Image (tube, rainbow, N blue to C red; front, side, top):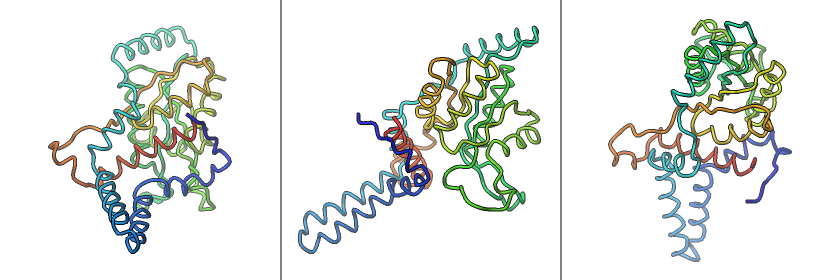
Length: 280
């Protein structure tokens, strides 16, 4: 597979991604088919029909699950045996007052620049789910937590100071105030997954951490895991702890009907596939 290096277009990634994902390409195909129908009715009609079918499928939760399982192929949830080993290791280090050799790393998934009900910036649902799961793992294992997330490319703009808080800064506030579990490390400068990995690995390596328990959504884990393994270069052990797998929540036949949830999940899966292709 040909590797594409598009780092020069980083600031354009939000726009390019939106243009490459449904429904934009399919709507353009419908317009193209409509334009061709005046001269080549059969070809134009087939393009419109196939585009409409593709739009339908792009809104189905069943399609999202197929892409996640068969194409993205995220690792399985972290095993109980692994959690037991991590708990045993952290317990021994705590008794001997040795700095932790392992840490839980939660990746940011986005933020709300200014939540009206709070009057300040807040985590979005993806980030909050990841933080909650990371804190749960921390309580089970006794390991300290790092949160990695700055301000994404799509939100790089001039704005009031309180809305320019990084994801990690917001997460630190939420973790301490709402979950009563302070974070040990906050990486506040990364703008995407690649920078998450580079900056967090450097931060934890400097503190002697040798193993990272990586927390992010299942659909994001393959790309995140590869980025962290590349950044670590074999010097750290990366243990995936994915959450939020696409699961069946309704009757099988209903999963092939268009829904907002289906559209969101398909876009998430395709976005990760696209991200993997251009950063491999």
